[in-house]
Image (cartoon, rainbow, N blue to C red):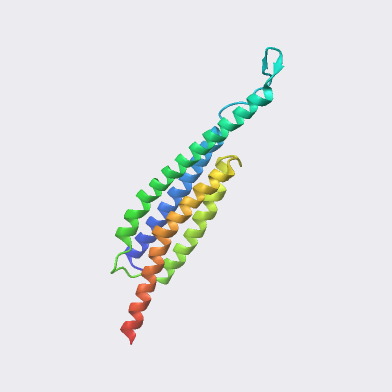
Length: 169
């Protein structure tokens, strides 16, 4: 393998680790702020018990805050993955690059590892709460890594194989 091929694989793995750590970090934040308002224990207004109604409002507010936080974290993670992967995709996978079969195997393993580790690390960071938000964060990473890393690798490998076949003919 050439130095360029090794550099491609190393930078891809570094970007993958950074994305997994971003999911873990945002998962940790989700675990901390998933229920910002505590439920009421005893709410009496003019002798009537309004605890249930107050807890209903608290649950609605916590849900709305969780939705806003989840959407904003997904947008931020989308931008982070775009900033990391788009330049890598444009610079590394160019027309003249030769892709070795080992590189494609490493790309497949890295893609599977990113998805699996993002899911696990996100759940651990969130202390197994906020399942939907962690699933969305993992989905953002999986789609972006698949489209901007794995797919270009696969297409470049196919192009190299096709060029080899045309050269041999």
